Length: 215
Ligand code: AP5
Ligand code: MG
Image 1 (cartoon, rainbow, N blue to C red):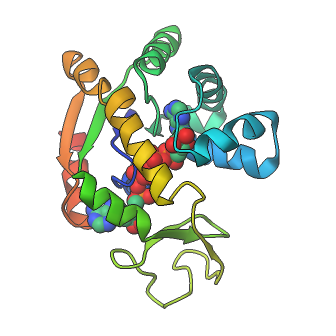
Image 2 (tube, rainbow, N blue to C red):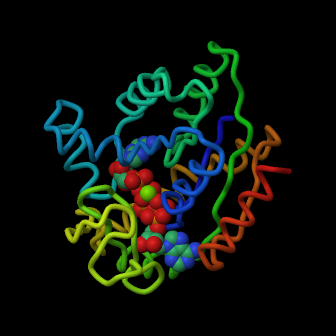
């Protein structure tokens, strides 16, 4: 199964990806997480991406397509995968089509998260994650069961993303509307687009996604 999660920053892609991965037992591929991993590891890609990401702009298609090609060849992708934050431009979508055609695979569904811009800003400004395992939380909408302790791994260390400040968020939203939104008609024309109402509570959004995938 090959799925794509498409939606603006803060729409809930990462939150829902963790649940989809668990239910369908497929790999979760977040290009944002891959880039943050490259920055933490100090690789050449990480060095090139850091300032672009902190400013809220998109990293070049060449770098991203190379990362995805490599990652999708790994053994854990054999049974399928979930793309979170990729593709983000029409050029990336075309590169993905080409890659899948070469492998004789196809996209099962593109799930679009429809969320108002005002809600996105509220979600991003309250977001934090476990510094050890990466589990995601929110100051109001998704608190750990025990305050200050990660539900998943018990760690007490948390961090916030360096691109979650107001200026970068504005640029990220503009990049979504200008460069990524053209993918909606692209996938609608291929009859692959399924839109869910991303304004509901986290569990309600999960229910809608599972219904769309199960058909
Ligand atoms: P990336 O890491 O992909 O970030 P993004 O697209 O900006 O999306 P986010 O991760 O911010 O949001 P999300 O939708 O995952 O929301 P989440 O579930 O965390 O990309 C970062 C940067 O990397 C880009 O700006 C770019 O520079 C670069 N990059 C990455 N991919 C690229 C590509 N393909 N091409 C070029 N450049 C690329 O939820 C947010 C918060 O809201 C959480 O706290 C959560 O608890 C809460 N929440 C979630 N759902 C709900 C709900 N239903 N109700 C209430 N709260 C909710
Ligand atoms: Mg994310």
